[in-house]
Amino acid sequence: MDLESGQVVKSLAGRDKGKLYLIIGIEGNRALLADGRCRCVIKPKKKNLNHLQPYRCVVPEIKERIRQGNLNDNVVRNTLNIMLSAESGKNYSHCLRTSLSDGC
Image (spheres, rainbow, N blue to C red):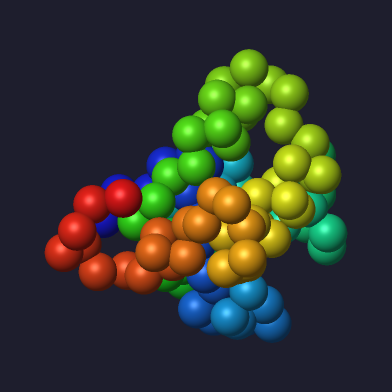
């Protein structure tokens, strides 16, 4: 599965193993990751693509904000919270599965 900006990924290796991030860019074989808390948009974490578990949904709002250049930490943090919250009106919980059996 190809990775792209705005996609949610989970870290598989390192100190941050198990943590969710949003991809805000890709440089060669590394993804630039932000979570809005420890890793800010202005100083993203660089992580090897082999150490990431991609989820199949790309958040269109994030992708558009990255393209426009107006992504901030609050938006990243809120998006990740929405993705994890089943109580939200915009329920993305089905996107946090890696199987490709049904589209998002």
